[in-house]
Image (cartoon, rainbow, N blue to C red):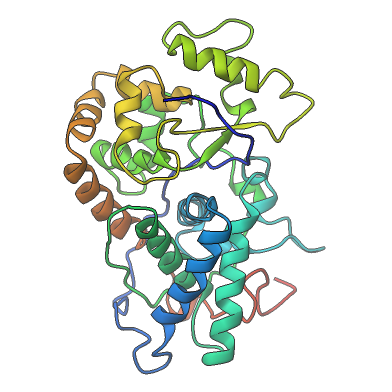
Amino acid sequence: MSLYIPVLFLVLVFVPSLNSAPPPNLTKDYYQKTCPDFSKIVRETVTPKQGQQPTTAAGTLRLFFHDCFMEGCDASVLIATNSFNKAERDDDLNESLPGDAFDIVTRIKTALELSCPGVVSCADILAQATRDLVTMVGGPFYEVKLGRKDGFESKAHKVKGNLPLANQSVPDMLSIFKKNGFTLKELVALSGGHTIGFSHCKEFSNRIFPKVDPELNPKFAGVLKDLCKNFETNKTMAAFLDPVTPGKFDNMYFKNLKRGLGLLASDHILFKDSSTRPFVELYANNQTAFFEDFARAMEKLGTVGVKGEKDGEVRRRCDHFNNLNV
């Protein structure tokens, strides 16, 4: 199979944050009476969008991870910067968050405001859309409990030091995951989200320039070197995180790691490190085990740091607080 890598925008998939317990009112039928068509509207909105832009699923998954990771699953990552505040999405580490992911949330919010105005939070929209899109591209179905409120804060300065990076070691990544309640096995399972998506050349350039990392598959390295030769001037250059089945949510990501086809250093280290290798081996050999663990980890991720009635709101627009001066 060819390892040709197309040019597209970055989709790194990394994970959670905050230790707040979920409020007691998170339920799967939260909108049954107040917005009975919620699930239908989300599904009918994401389906054509994914068909038109096949990168939407990976982008939305990444956006959801980044949201939950910073201030809990409260749609803080959706907030736009204004004259009073530089928001999370404008920090350097979030600059490549994909436009298609923001767009699908906006589309869903617009449709819901026509059907049941002022009822559904942007945080719930992002959580539900992520699940629907993951299943659309072949991933496991998992339950999404609803009732999150949208947070009141989004600060760019809080991003650095709180997001796993493309060149981090397993201990460094684990320290971030653990403070948010995730285990080493869950770290590996959630990293499997890299079975879909893309990464900009700058995120892995140190593995191919000036010298090639000897642990990279030589043919893969050659393709990447050619693709990224002008990455410093053309910053849009990017590669599939899974070069074999990039549009399908499966366990190929883990099989790739064993063959030197892990794109990021933080991908490759999962196979190289003795503490995480057994999980990589397990998921490479057993897709069912990966899907089950990924689904459980996603359900858990969706409860991280969620806001209730007292510390959140239902935004009228997902990119602005209702009080625009916040």
